[in-house]
Length: 81
Figure 1 (cartoon, rainbow, N blue to C red):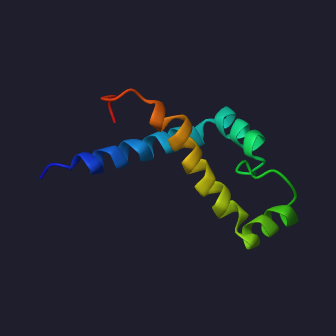
Figure 2: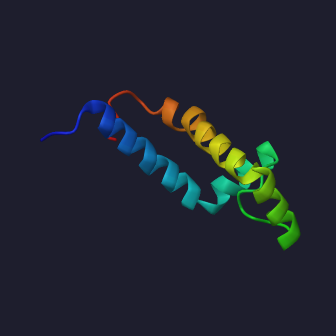
Figure 3: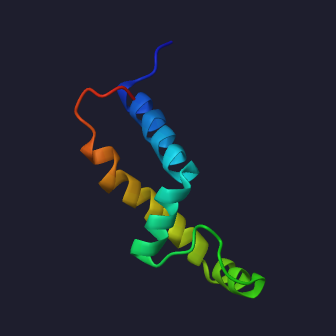
C-alpha cells in the first residue's frame, strides 16, 4: 500500500514543524516576534496561568501557522517532503 500525496505532504510538514521546534534560535525569535512564550520563560505561577488560560495551546497553534507561512509555503515546488 502506498501513501497518498496528501499523506506524504502532511508527514513532510510535521517533520518541518518538529525541526523548527527543536531549533532554539527559531523558537526564541518566534517568541520575540509574536510575544508568545513557547520557551517557557517566567515563574511557575506565570506558566501555570498561561496553561490555565489556554495561552500555551494558542501559542502552539500560532507556531504551527507561523511555520506554515514562513517556512513551508516558501519551499520550492517539488522539494522533498
